[in-house]
Picture (cartoon, rainbow over the protein chains, first blue to last red):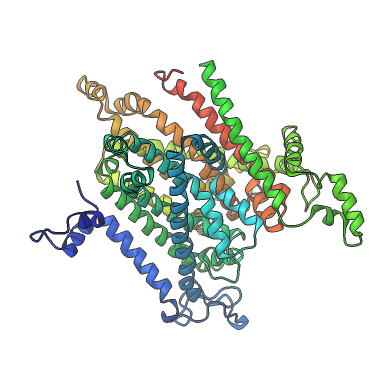
Length: 298
Length: 313
């Protein structure tokens, strides 16, 4: 079995003869190229977002009617939009919104979903009620659920994150509940119960570590899906406020002109697709390396 | 069997009840006071109060939910704030393009995705397999509207093979109808194809290792029969299941695809309703889409016995 880098290193600290952590990490990446490619691309996007002001950008919200709808040129690398704003600067700053939404939703949905899933898996009387609510939520297509929630509030990054998180929670909760239910039947958990271990100890010592692998894979897929949903929400005008340069917003603004100035949509589209691709590759790679049985099948 | 059908139908009731409660609460907590809107600017607080009472808006939450549910069951989804038309009428006007788009996408996606998954599993590890799976990852990663604009730009603007945007009702003829829907259906179908192809491949990989497949090959059954008759039949249940679950993707994607291709369907209706904060319409559309989603999956559960005679309830 190919071991995940983190936990194994922690489990066997005193092995002087073995290869160093860095060597093992490099070996892991070589064996799972999609983790390397996806992770690398994602780090690159994150760096672009963090260092956006240093990457030869101008103020992404600066309006200049004199230079509207320019084609890409040496001066305006990605051209300008209807209001004369520099598309290159807007796309570069847009990375911040997508990554912020993607990571926030992945973390929030994981934490809340994990809690609900553990609760449903352990507190049997609550399980029926919780699962019916989850079934109900899952019968509303996630994008519609997010749209409906956004209709209630004003567009802001915070509200977008909350809306998408709520739409994603049921999937995580259901996954964790399934893992908990199958683990409860494992002999070592039964042994722990027979030994008189209390519920918190069983959860933290025996159950939680085993949810790590499926959860981290699920979290990357949530991150990818959140980025797409954010772009869709912004694109249809129910997402982050139009003044914020997000990839969805830039494309929404390019819609009216797409037949004559396709580049306004093209550049944010390429960045968005590459970022989501990076996250998906990372997720596939993690899945393959964390669960070789699953890797063979899917 | 009958007992199962009844039980399965009964389990959808709490699910739909939850959806109804959620959708109702949406309007309940939505900002803006309908009574004040209807009363207008000139009304005194007493007038507003009177209208509120006549609309029943002053009654408790659960009473209003019960009344609202009662009306919904009778097919009354309320009145659009913006157009003053009944929501059911608005939905009825927009339903044809969306249903056309979805059915076409469904057919197209299944025709492409299932053989793709089968062949990828058969040639597992080959470049065909790798290509198909790379395509699937791309399908998951490239957002619907990006695909839409790209296809429209290439096939409509540059090559001028197909119309750029718009919709022609099927009553105006099959070809004009189809011509307008080809690009949207491919656009919407891409994620769906990726999903179905992946599951098909995964299931087929498992089935192809079974003894009866080896037996069939050993006795000289043609490879295509082994794949599409012996194996695919046994892989059908997970594939049919994912086709049903994937309807959620189609519904979400339709909202965007219709915007890109200017199709006057339910997706456009949703987007317009969001922009105008027309809550009764949002409510109606969410409720209807969820009902469709639940019913399709109910139907699929019930057809398992047809797909796989070994399943008995």
